[in-house]
Image (cartoon, rainbow, N blue to C red; front, side, top):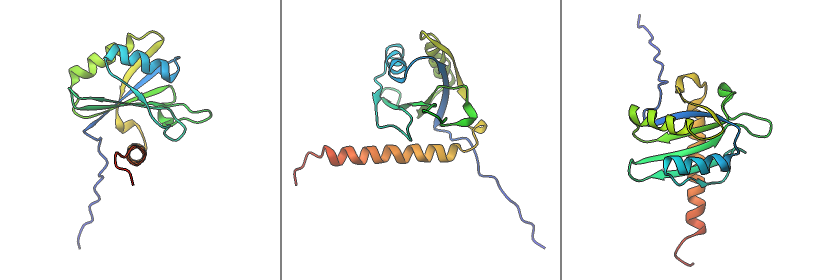
Length: 153
């Protein structure tokens, strides 16, 4: 009789790094300080499911940065991270030395209580979170292409 083997395909995404930030700042103030400390240029985008969303692209390191608010008016985006106020998602290659440097700079921002790396294994539904975020960003890009199309119809 043949044996059935069930494989668990859940693994941490290799191209994403997630950081948690706890602070008492508003989202626009935190993005301002991150722009200064990290020498990036975060831009406000349409909210992601009632949570603030900022985006930045680093051409030198080929990374994309997403700053998300973890707290809405009455809900939390990732309930597994209740104590975290903001999430910084980095898409692209990211080395350990870069992670440590980034964490030191974030911790140096006034009113930031702590910053830490979050392992994806600790989040129950990280696959759906990443896919929802990707769909949201695709919709935003599609709308901006339609809205700012250089060709007149």
